[in-house]
Length: 321
Length: 283
Ligand SMILES: Nc1ncnc2c1ncn2[C@@H]1O[C@H](COP(=O)(O)OP(=O)(O)OP(=O)(O)O)[C@@H](O)[C@H]1O
Ligand SMILES: [Mg+2]
Image 1 (tube, rainbow over the protein chains, first blue to last red):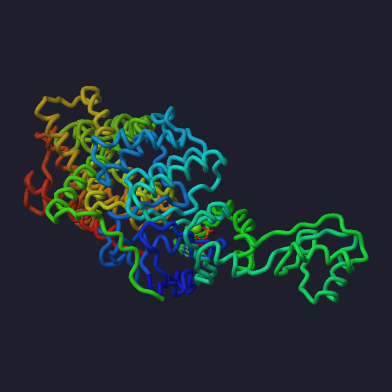
Image 2 (cartoon, rainbow over the protein chains, first blue to last red; image 1 turned 180 degrees about the vertical axis):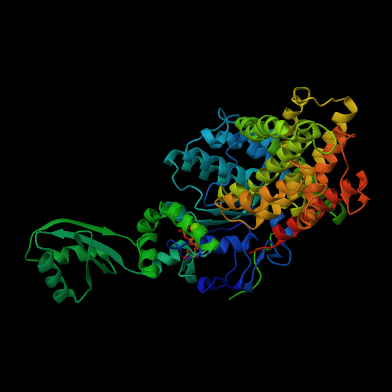
């Protein structure tokens, strides 16, 4: 994609982004709520037109070759898009028909997927009797059903229990190994981001970083030392004057970034006159990367995601006006 | 930044003809599937049939009897008033449930299923056609229940008449569902429902000849009724079961059956085409 822009009225949701994803890659798309991830995916999936710029998916232009694009992709939506009054199996069958999965192959494909998401016994029950997590699981199974060349996953595992997430990721890995499926994933879970071949971080509609997880972590550079003391204010003062480093107060503790955390810790005790109650050294994580580029904690973004429902309702109201 | 993206060449791409044949098969099956979905949903919400029956029953039995006694032997359209009302009420039931069924698309939008359909590699025509046929079928099923009341109000039915009536109802249901889909495509939320009721459904029914004969009306009313496409659907239903009733006229011209059918079919096709266009546009 190149120079992709999408405006809603005056508001610019996607502001000139451009990058490419290699075939077979697992590409992570991270960003705080409202950064423009879903909007970007909607454009790539032909559900929205770009205001400016071009994008190609599987080699096809998303505006001029919509049918080709649609035939090449699969999509797991951020919100549930199942028919409540159909059974799980009927929802899958409906999908299979639209995507031209041969009827003879269908049972052979449906069963492993239903097993993967633990819904085999529920296959013939109407979806409206499912729990939220079960709907999510069915939605994922549906997205994988027709083995698309490019699969878009918009926060697919939000609200799922850890065991189910593991099952799903095992299956996804297997699928990638077998079919070389290209995957475009948005997530607020760090362990999922960690799996990606490359990650792009988007903030306010702009790409602020794009690289492999390791390179991104290296770009943060420093280790994080967290310590709690009897008198944080005084400790902060002493550390600042002794090492001329920046000391931040975060979550009731002091945080400082230094190149080599482990070697730094003993030196702390040389300068501090107040008692230290705990100390911790952490290598840079994607969380730090996220924080560095967006100024926000990845976990805050995750917590915000549960407010999605409300914000979606707002978007609808807005559209109407 | 770097331009074109994600090539992923498929090993040995299938020929253009093979792709085309597969696409045709996929679209045909999609029409069937969308159609079936409507019937499955009706089956799982049987209360829809019950609530859909309440209004027509009230009109037919209560209004039919009440106004019937007021009008007395004079009747309407050359027959007893309640008899006259019977096909009108059937048509009214079909019109109502078709419109409401189609407006259900707004639910699909709200619950996201519409997006699942719109992102699929099937033509918008298949989706809209499946919906129009399926939704039409559902409202005929809802209307058919009323046919059993015929003897009660003194309408003589023969197999031939019932078949003709079913045909008329199907045609009307298809046209009104297509119309409803167009309305729904412009609506973002369910609140607009009330508006459809007040601004579209009720005028359409009252101006159609469903509840009173269209002869000797004041000029403006005569014009409005003849401009209403539903009028021709109602006439079609009435002729199917009451060949003896007075026929629809425009001025001095007695409207033939084929003209009725043509108007209804034309309306259906026109709105179907509009609906396909609307759904082909991306925001
Ligand atoms: N249909 C719309 N009309 C108006 N504004 C919209 C519309 N859709 C999205 N927006 C706005 O565009 C911005 C980007 O939204 P988007 O859904 O792409 O965010 P996101 O990155 O997916 O966030 P999240 O992590 O919460 O899913 C938001 O500020 C949102 O309010
Ligand atoms: Mg989103």
